[in-house]
Length: 321
Image 1 (cartoon, rainbow, N blue to C red):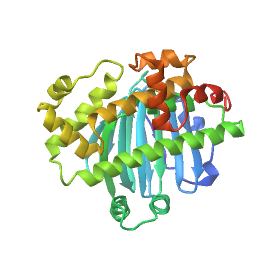
Image 2 (image 1 turned 90 degrees about the horizontal axis):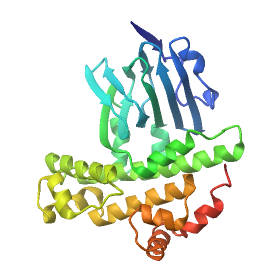
Image 3 (image 1 turned 45 degrees about the vertical axis):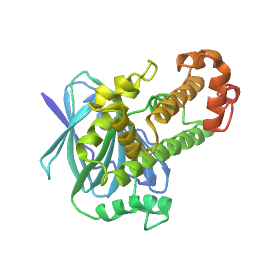
Image 4 (image 1 turned 60 degrees about the vertical axis):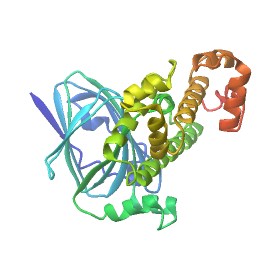
């Protein structure tokens, strides 16, 4: 048995839908909710948290051109676009960057599988205002969005540890408190900056780096995320990339715009910040957790990267909670 829900009634980016729980759409087919949150003109967060009572199909039919960042922090779905006969599996802890116009797809949820997704959607007008430069490499996305119909997965990458912690924390905020909504917006814009910057790096490097090398460099980045708190060596990562250490470092920097060593250090610092914000841990405990033998070295690196000391995170972490 497979139930079907039509999501045509969910008008994306309509201010009237701001902070409205769509639980009624799910009953009696699934437990959970669909919660769209309008964050500003042309930017929306849509949080799905559901468990299907039977196999469930969501029909997605929207007219608007959109740039969407889609993640699943639990479970996953199979997706099919009916115009292009395209099939895609969206997996846990992956970030999918998607361009779409006249969405005409179906999302398939398995019976009794708990699924949680965090989808950040922006309009062409929001992107244009954000870039404010017709010559910016990402401005070409605006031309692409004029195509109809359109469904293009621009990028698939591992979801960073920092993003995972941020999403988990945001999903539990009580948005009836105005300061929590303000906090949500600030964290979402931080995530959007990171994801747009990664898309920019990917866009500018695609022409110069062969597709096979891009595949293996993304595989290395995924491996780093999965083993972030373990010792990582060039020899080990070279085996993942199936190349030598010199070419690995050169290709990685070409794709991600920073050295492999810097990337690992920054990802660990981002993870440390998330631990300080969400866990009851002292600074020395966090330092040890992310691989620093001495708290002083950790504090120096943290302050240099974020512009403030790790202790300041502890002093302010309860402000919005």
